Amino acid sequence: MRNNFSAAACIKGGPDAPRLSGVARFYQKNDGVLVEVEVSGLPKSNKTGFFALHIHEGGSCTGKEFANTKAHYNPESMPHPNHAGDLPPLLSFSGNAYMAVMTNRFTVNDIIGRTVVIHSNPDDFYSQPSGDAGEKIACGVIKRR
Image (tube, rainbow, N blue to C red; front, side, top):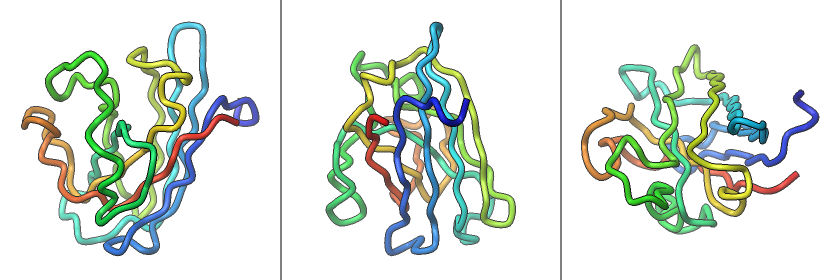
């Protein structure tokens, strides 16, 4: 399965997490998209060990604190945490994390050219507009493979 992914994003940390790196893979299936994320170098500054993970609407990891990623991908104008780009959090274990989830909130074609963002805090799943997830500490642009 790993060799048949439809899209991927190489994730790189910014100034607040320079050692953070990893990959997000997106596999189009008949009933949804399998999202698989594997990262290392998560900072120890987060007391809970959980880090919010979202797909953002912007197509660039540029700008101060990844400002050009813009807001969460939310084509249906839903309240948080029902944005299409809202994903389960990453849980750090010695700076490493792996997460896999199946979603029907988007197709691979919907997210090509958008960004995957890791935030400094866990998502609280209710604060508007983005779950009080903190600063953007890592980013990757989603590209077709």
